[in-house]
Image 1 (tube, each protein chain N blue to C red):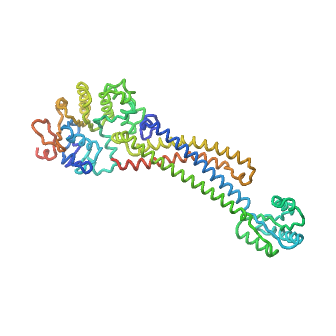
Image 2 (cartoon, rainbow over the protein chains, first blue to last red):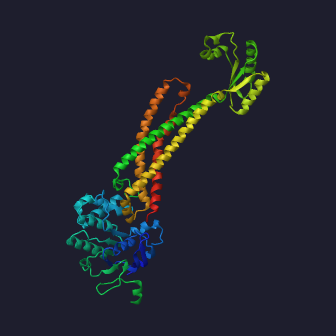
Image 3 (tube, chains in turn green, yellow):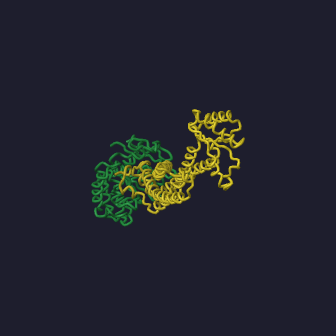
Amino acid sequence: MANIVQFENVGLRYGTGPETLSDVSFTLASGAFYFVTGASGAGKTSLLRLLYLAQRPSRGIIRLFGEDTVTMPRGRLPTLRRRIGVVFQDFRLIPHLTAYDNIALPLRVSGMAEHEVEEPVREMLAWVGLAQRGGARPPTLSGGEQQRVAIARAVIGRPEILVADEPTGNVDPDMAERLLHLFDSLNRLGTTVVVATHDFGLINRIPDAQMMRIDRGRLADPTGSLRYPPRRPDAAEHA
Amino acid sequence: MSIATTSGSAARRLLDDGRRARAMRWVMAVMLFLTVLACALGIATANVAAALDAQLGGRLVVQIVAGSDAARDAASNRLAEALGAMPEVRAAVPVPRAELAELARPWLGDAGLSADLPMPAMIDIDLRDPSASAVTAVTARARSIAPDARVDRSAGWLAPVRGFVVTLSGLAGGLVLLMASATGGIVLLTARAGLDTHRDTIDVLHMLGSTDSQVARLFQRRIALDTLIGGVVGSLAAAAAIMVIGWRAAGLDSGLVGGASLGTGGWVVLALLPLAFAGLAMVAARVAVLRTLERRL
């Protein structure tokens, strides 16, 4: 499988503070399923923000879809962002838009005609079990429903990479399993999935997934307790 | 419908700011009310200046003050005949003594009608071409016939009035420009405030792949629409005020004020002001949003 993401010696520092991420290097293969795990504050969200282009690194090289995103002019970022679906930890739904309109946003942003928007949005609402809730606004939805709307919004544009930050943090175990099943289904359709979580029970449900562990801003060395450690560029050469 | 090209309601709902929109419309209504009044003043005073130029620009008055009444009248007739024959002159008409006496009546009363009162002979000259060279030629010709003749440009008498009118016109134009720049400033502040208010929404749009232009379009359309709605309301109110002023001015029966009409062209200019300001607001909003977004990733 070709690499879709490449990080080389990436460091991230907010302002003049200490480095949140240091010397992070890894590659993600196209079509694979990855978990990013680590303790709270370890740097999972920062890593994901770099991945979905919400942040540029302080140093190092990041290549997405074969393009250097660190030196790329900001005017070209939207094109890459449309190829990435993001499920934010705090959902980040637009509260005054209905669930339908929230899910339809990526399609409208990409310039799809309105008559082409309705069918995929209805399908997506049904897929996440919210067919009857399309007209509801996020504040009137439960945490789990909001989570599902956020996931539907992230995947409706058929992204090549799906990035999810603690996507099951606000849902009960049954719903968590359903959501994971959704991610697995997408992955089987060819989408590279990156999920940040510290729920090992969840991780164990995807046996083919690889895992990256972040520890105090560094990509932890593989240990015997972790299955399917990520392939690092240097490790790949020696393999 | 995309947010890039939307004309639908979904994209309009992206910026949920009903209160801000209403406040913006009221501000724009006031701005356009004042702007339309200032512009109307400018147009009316410019029309007055143009009317003065048209009426007086090509007119001269020749006065003969020396000699007896008979000598003045004879000189006046000779001069009128000679000047009337010049190619630069359209007409040279001696002003009858009775008419001069009528003009003097407000100051002299019936005494102005007395034949004993010395009164200069006057010739009203209407030039074909109001150029300085024509005035010089007429003056030289008049002095060659009557060396003590005095030639005055009629425009010179009203030069202070015309200067005042032109100053008013310039002031009104300056006010319109000031209002336009203030409107631009208000739009810049509103757009920036809107960007702060909708920061989360804009961040989400960016993460979904929106371009800066798409985001800017949301703001520029909203602000242009608010300006247009407010502008139309303000302009209609100003038009009503102008009509009332015009009606009251008509009652003054003043030649100067009577020339201060707007004309069809003036009303068309006033009607276009809300559109012009909406366009200005749209451009200002776009510039403000794009410049602010450039500083974000």
